[in-house]
Length: 385
Ligand SMILES: *Cc1c(COP(=O)(O)O)cnc(C)c1O
Image 1 (cartoon, rainbow, N blue to C red):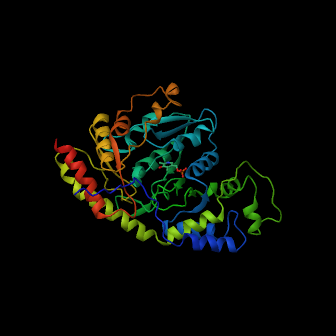
Image 2 (cartoon, rainbow, N blue to C red; image 1 turned 90 degrees about the vertical axis):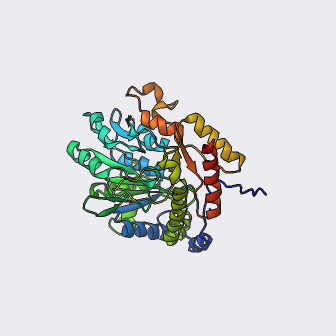
Image 3 (cartoon, helix red, strand yellow; image 1 turned 135 degrees about the vertical axis):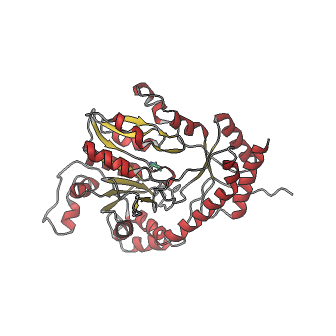
């Protein structure tokens, strides 16, 4: 007998407390930004992960835009980023007039290949934007070393990297997002902890601290005013309305209270996928995620790397015929409709390989062991032929 499972790619998980906190936020009568729940969330992150200053934003894209403003990126500046990433990584800097200098991924890991960065640095380079793909750390020691040597800013795109760490050679663990001068996180419903849409800017370098609050609050010094540090507030700088309503923060806070549970559940699914698919990796049929010694795994994503585009498409169809939704990921940004005419760099073959061959499997809280076994069986059967 066929059991139909109908497994979506993602299903946002609700802890059950979201609506309680939202009701509480609404009942206080103060539901605009920078309220009680916003502070609770920001304090949580600052204390738990040693982030210097956190500001909730309406998205990770917004947080990256704030970072680009704070970094004073302007017309003609160059920003080094991977090509295998989401549009937002690049667009925040494009909006400031920068040129994105795309770097290739590693052959066995979609992250920016740190050994390729130095050759791309010019007198116009202002920042490096590493993306911790699938929540797996980039080589941050190497990247920070280059940034120090050439006086560049590092802005971590940590959209997928909540509760993930970089492990130094001496064994010290630092949270991703706490290492660069600034970092951006996402709480979009596809990430580990969510608020529908939502994000956060982390400011680790004090020199950006004061200005970050001003840009966050429409170019005003309102935050200082409410702390009683100035006796009137007004327009003092550029900025926008980057702060979310406290209703969004209330939703997020419920998720944060359950973060350990969410992470444990995701890790369980991830490890089970890994165990069942390891034989296919070991006999060279497919590749599984490669996690360096310096990286932890926050189980944001489980992906496999097929051999080519045709094979991946056939596998997607086979899974779909069994009502399992598996999806590919980014198209290399240097080949996008928007950027390809301005791209004069070299071929980024590793990035292109992940564009063609990487396949993401369903991973969400309510997935069951039975689901994972069902999905991996389809993959194993597919490769038997
Ligand atoms: C999800 C994601 C973003 C965008 O996050 P939003 O909160 O939707 O703006 C940016 N970069 C990466 C790498 C992402 O995965």
